[in-house]
Length: 351
Image (cartoon, rainbow, N blue to C red):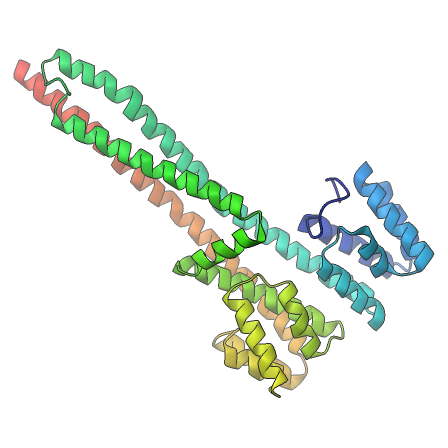
C-alpha cells in the first residue's frame, strides 16, 4: 500500500492500494482491535512514504477519535471514500462500509487493468506492423529496385514496384497516424476536460458506446447499492452518485432520475423510466424495491455488468489479432507481389 509518494493530489492513490487499505482497516475493526493501534500495525509493514501517511492517520484517530476526520486531514484520499466513512461512522456500520469500499476499489482496479491490456495489445501490434512495413519499404524495396534496374526493367523498377512502394508508404502513414492519435488520446486522458472530450467521441462509436454504458451502469449499481446499504436515503444517495459516475449519457440519466424523484416518483420507477437498466435488469430493480432488497439486487446487477464488461473487452482483444494478422498479410503480400512480378518478367525475358 502507498508505494508512491505520500502527498499525491486528491484521488490519485491507485485503486488497488485503496482496496487493500480498506480491506485491512475493515479487518482491524472486525478483530476488535482499537483502530489507531491497527493503523500503526499496518504502517509497520509499509514503505517509508506509506508508513508515514498511515502513522499520521493513526495519530489523528488517537487524538480526535474520528477516522473520517483523519482521512480528510491527510488530503490524499478520494472525497467519495471520505464521505462513505462519515456515513459508516454515523450509522455504526463502518466495518461494512469499509468492506464494501474494498470490493468497490478492487473492481475499479480490475477494470483499469483490463482496459490497459485491451489498449496495450493493439498498440504493440500496430508498432510491430509499422516496423515490419518500414523495413520492407525503406530497406528491402530499394535493394530489389537496384536489382531490377541492373536487369534493365526501367529506371524506377517498373510500374508495379512503384505501385507497391506507394501502397506501403500509404499504409505506413496511416499506421503512424494511428500511433499519433493513440498517444494524443493517452495525453488527453490525464485531464478532466480531455476525458470529457474522449467520452464524447466514444459516444459516436457503437462498440465503445456500449462498453462505456456497461461500465457506467456497473459503477452506478455498485455505488447506489453501497449507499443504500450504508443507511443513505434514496434522495441523498442520488445526490452523491454524480461525484463518482463518469460524465456522459449515464450521468445525464442519473440527473434525470434525481429530478423525477423530486417530483414524487420512487427510485425504482425513475430508474426504470429513464432506462438506466434496460429490459430484464430494469424489472429486477422494481422487484428488489418492492421486496425491500434493492441494495442486494443492485449489487447483483453490478456483478452482472462487470462480467459483461469483461466479456466485451476480451472479445474486442480477441478480434484484434486476426484483423491485424490479415491486414499485415495483405500489405506484405501486396508489396512482395509488386517486387516479384517485375522480377519474374525480367527473368523470363532474359531466358
